[in-house]
Image 1 (cartoon, helix red, strand yellow):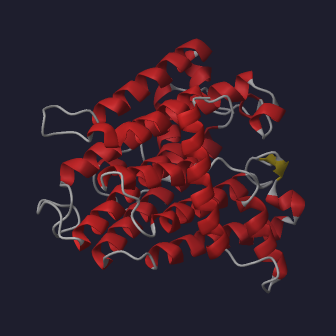
Image 2 (image 1 turned 90 degrees about the horizontal axis):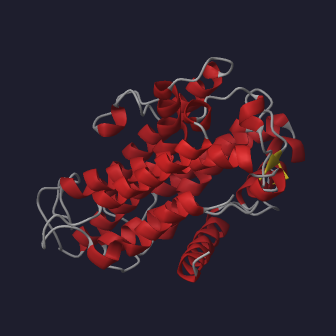
Image 3 (image 1 turned 30 degrees about the vertical axis):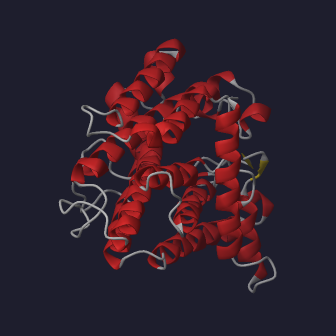
Length: 335
């Protein structure tokens, strides 16, 4: 791994873990079982990719500065991701006993406790976002984006409301209902953009919105803004971040599909071959492994294009380097 990427991942994960440690109730807080279950899954060794993407998107728009409080937003997104994993592993869904190299929550505790731990993480995530040290209009915009990305897509506006991106829970439903059906290109893309891509996309968009609020407080920016007030960038900025996230998110899941077929359980930290055994609709099932790899590379190139200047006054310049490096890591990773 490139040393710069490794440093970026380590520092971002540390920042996120410190925030999670502050925000999650301690293991001795009553009732013990639920808080220990929440911490078991949250601190099981995840890469923290979503919060790191959130933090780096904010840094990019803030000119390399780390906006105060951004780690709490990243931590909230990680809580939502962990909640989804806990529920995804339940016997009623994927019925898996290994996650991040550790026993899944319902195996380590109980099915009832795991369900409630996921619920509690979701609730705490929205509480954390509501309490962010940002202008109220920025907090409301972030809450709305995150709620849409996590849900079924009802009431959406903009790109994320298209039939290909109904939200994470909507994607999980499609994934369940597609088991045993012949996979089609349209079905696989719809599931991937929703189940995985929506949360990755909103991590980047939310980080951008937070940075706009950060700039707004300092009187920097444009009047043509999704936030309705003066901000650092206009609507086009958020649209480009959304495109970047959608492309990178789809590439991430395609690579996940390939790794599920080519890596061992020890390498993945979760049960390998589960998608094939469950007749899941995956990208390689439609296109094959080699074409899937090519598609992931092409999507990352398209993601880069969304951040590339079209003239001297456009684009994000060197401030986008970290975000681009993270996107490249999504397709180069081996677990």
